[in-house]
Length: 140
Image (tube, rainbow, N blue to C red; front, side):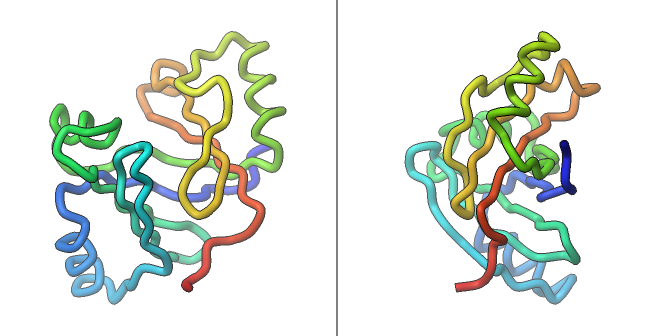
């Protein structure tokens, strides 16, 4: 089952500049900033009520899924992520329904999570991520 919206992912060209904009416009400061070299992304999380906003910057231009997204689409909303209790079970259910998946097996995500993406062709052209977390993201 879907527990809640976990986060909304936004692709940005320059994370430091985006952080300044979110603080100046909305008074938001990131609760966590981390880099995942294996997927070529640097990310920052803001808490907005019970939902996180995740800013995503490629570690090098054109690298990884975020770099390719930015080259094709420019900055903007990249995905919506739903929290699930058991990502493996949810993926098995989706496979049984023959839902196209970008990730058939969960992988590591931001904030010590397990994630998997559903292909947008199954969700009205919305890139959808499933997220399983052992704990909430909190500032360090």
